[in-house]
Image (cartoon, rainbow, N blue to C red):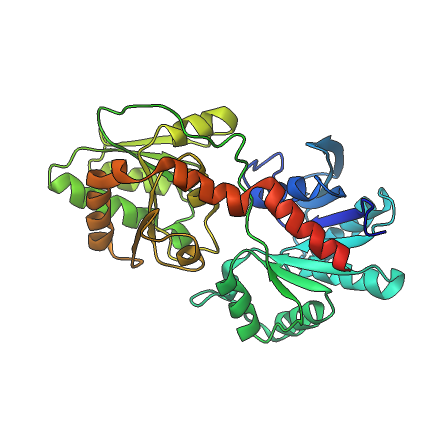
Length: 372
């Protein structure tokens, strides 16, 4: 069995879908990396106005998205959530392993299958809710999460700090493993360019509570006050997009800030790779995939020192600053505007290839599956 391809079913709480092609992209990349060595099926369910199933194969990953009718009743919506997952599972051959991405509901499904069918399951947690300053509370939620984690064959996290935060909440398992996010190095590549004005790139989901984009705009205002030339491109969309755009206009940022909205595929890659460095101003962050994508394109970064970011950002590839400190962020960006050309783009990219490529992460996941 150890030399055969196994059938692994991903139960994903977050995954790209018809209303949000960016949600859970990192889960999709894990699936595609795992598919190099195993047969991967992904199940994702999403509340909608009507019931629908989309069953397709994307990049060698069978992907079943179930859109179920949302109810005003939380209990009925929860029942429909579980029913939608059950219907999707019935479409698939019996899995050798279930791989849960993001707790806790999907972990209950996997635990049930282990009890009834003897199917082992592992958990990959991406959520930063366990980190300080976030909300992991509720007696029943904690109790169920502890049980689900305890009975998993392995628990993986993308950073060491997230694993320790989970253990700090009593989510104990004998087999915690760090499995980092994936960067598609075949698409995120350096691009020859010369910007007359230095170009700063920011990519996020435009949720201000976590990403603190208004704080970044405040820092850019400080740079502008020093008559420092730059262009900052904001890529993405989200619940706070209009508020953030209005905030920048109130501060009279019109010539030095540009909002692109959501970019995908080659448009996103070209916009990032043509930058001079990337900036991330998050209040909390599990790992920050966009930082890895910037490195793959040969760009250094300026980032807040939060979550798992210090595990991948150091003086060889960027500058770390305290969160919620516009002055320090502005100071770091000013330094980077003067020094970004001193960073070795080839070395930045090679660091990503070594640790975060499809092949590297795919082999790591395969070694976990084989151990079961």
